[in-house]
Each structure stands twice: as structure tokens, then as C-alpha cells.
Image 1 (cartoon, rainbow, N blue to C red):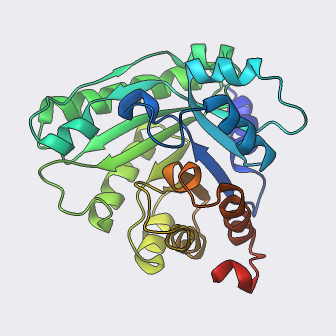
Image 2: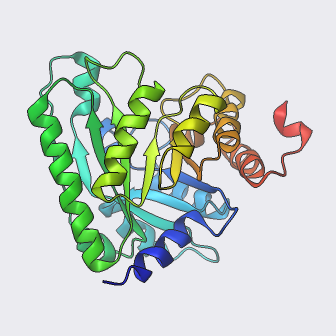
Image 3: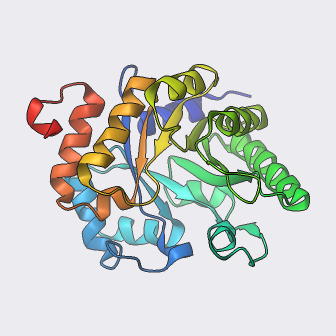
Length: 271
């Protein structure tokens, strides 16, 4: 079976050799509701496109809205989130049962014009039944992606009662390798906290890693430090959401993040 379709589509998302991707995650409202920065979704997606980000992570409903917007000029690649999880509420209150489910199949994402699909895979919960289903679901989606030629990006995470620090390299090494073994084409995951340990994680993974931004950092400058750390670690790019659409100055932040990723950062960007 040829994998040329996967290679072409993944190249659209990540860019060519030497390029580091700037991906905006805009899928939060499905699990967190309309948090600040997500209310006027169409206007925000226009701003992301104007900033020429490499790709957007969207749920299928917003992909339709994005397509109907008839944006002029540059269009980012689209990554379709095709699942849902209760992990965020379960980790927050400690009482919610762990659940996850597919909301669409890779074929649906392909028909919506997506260049890749993305799903969660969570370990460290202490719930063997939940985690076995996570692994089986990841493998199932990977096989479907292989059949239709669309890349699978796995958001591999360590969360739950067994996890003191999600960015602990011990956990990162474990779950990103699990995702690669199951057939992922790229990884979205936590930053370890420093470039040195993250470099070991990146070097030990056979597929590209993109660093997620997570919760809003204390400042735009702090968020840019994560971008710098990802670059220094050799990551393929970043997946930022709240640190983009909740930034003090979103357009300025995106310009500075792009400069860091491209290795052309000027001294003003570091102030």
C-alpha cells in the first residue's frame, strides 16, 4: 500500500525540510465551552489565516464554518479533531469517570478537506480499562488512516493519579513511543520544561514531535520561551491554543513565534 498520500498531506501541515510548524489549536470549546478568545470563532479563524499559521486544529463543525468563510488568499492546512475525552474534567475534580469516544472517522475528516486527523491517547490514569480502550482506539484509527492516506497525529499525554508532572521525561518517552508503535505519523505532547531533556525526548522518537502550549502562560514572553525551548530541542514545531488566542497581542505574538521558529528572531522579540 502506497503512503504517498500521507506524506504529501503531512508535508502540508509540517512544511518541508528545516521548517518548523506553527499550528493553532482551536478545538477547546468542545470540552471547555466558549472560553475567552473562542467566542467569535469565524473572526478568529480569519486572523489566524491572515497571520499565515501553518495549520489549524478544528472540530468538524468549525471546519465547515471555515470552509464557508471564503477566506481570501492564504489558507492554512486543517487538522481535524475527531474525538472527545472526559480527562480534563476528571483530572480537575477527581470524581468524574474517565471516558473517551470517537466523534467521526478519518474518512469523514478527509471529506471535510482535512490534511490530517488528531486524537488523544492518555496514560497514567490508574484506570487499566480506560487506557486499554485508548490504545485500542488509537490502533484502530491508525489502521483506517493507512487505508485512506491521511496522517494521524496523536496527542499523547500523561494525566491522572499516577502522574505528578505531565512533562516528566519518563512519561514522555513512554507514551510517545507507544503512539509511534501504534502507527502515529506525528505527536503533539507536553514540553518537559527545559531544552536539554526535551532534546532527548525528540531524539528518542522516530516520528516528528510538536510541543503543545497547554494552559495560558503568565505572559506572552513566557509562552515564547516555550517556543524557544521547542526549537532548541529540535521539535518539528508547536501546537499553541490559549497562548495564541488569549495573548495580550495575538498578531504580535504570532509574528514573534514565527520568527523564533524560523530562526530569524530579532532582539526586540526577546524583550
